[in-house]
Amino acid sequence: MEYEEFIRIVAREAGLNDSEDAERAAQAALETLAERLSKGEARDLLQELPAELKLWIYPRGDAQPFDLDEYLRRVAERLGVDIEVAERRARAVFYALGKAVSSEEIADLAAELPDDFEPLLAEAQGRFADVMPVEEFLARIATRTGLDVDGARRATEAVLETLAERIAAGEVDDMIPQLPIELHEPLKRGKSRIPNARRMPLEEFLRRVADREGVPFDRDVPPFEVQEHAQAVFATLREAISNEEFFDVSAQLPTEYWALLNLPT
Image (cartoon, rainbow, N blue to C red; front, side, top):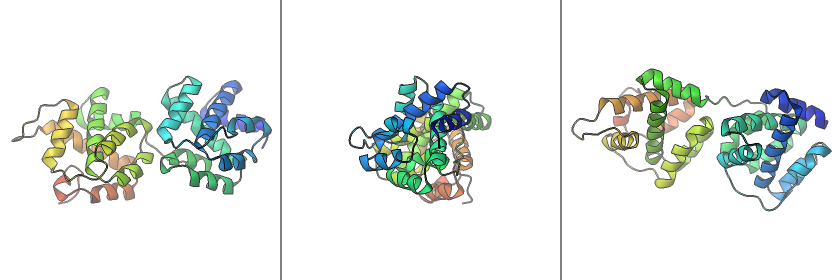
């Protein structure tokens, strides 16, 4: 593939009208990728790319073991844009990579990157991971609860952070790639605070959610609104992640939680 075609693909997929913006996106995404890859993998990749791209992917030291969120933060910083824009442009660059190099090389790339790079790797492999945009996720919460967007975000983050304390860390890691990047942080906070699944009665789960939302909680009569918010988040989570992943999450929760998940008891 010629350099000009690579840049045209990035521009088209990212919705950019200016080829210079597409070039900057390609440079930012590839330079950041080079920081994440081993020297051997970076060299293998650059051998299949147009000459003009080789300098951007050339290895600059030992691989730095950062995750997708840090990758996108670095891309955003290089471009001077927010995370959402950085993600859209990184997806476009990975799509172009999938067109420019062999499927075997993309498979090697996928083997070296952590699981949470799945949305970008899906672009490179032509599978197009369908991640629900955060705006849609929060809008569904707002519709179900009557909250405004800020309230929906607080409720969502409170429930996800508490859920990450309750289920196994590996299950949290499996769920993260299927959710918008803006919702990764509360899951990571909960996982880092309690790295192993914690036994937590439903009352304690709701109390923690209430504390994080800033809702008064009476142990004798837990506030209905907290239960309603948790139900709304779980209902939207069920729509946002795969059926298999939702089953895996629900399997780690005792039956007293099933009313929140709208499962038969």
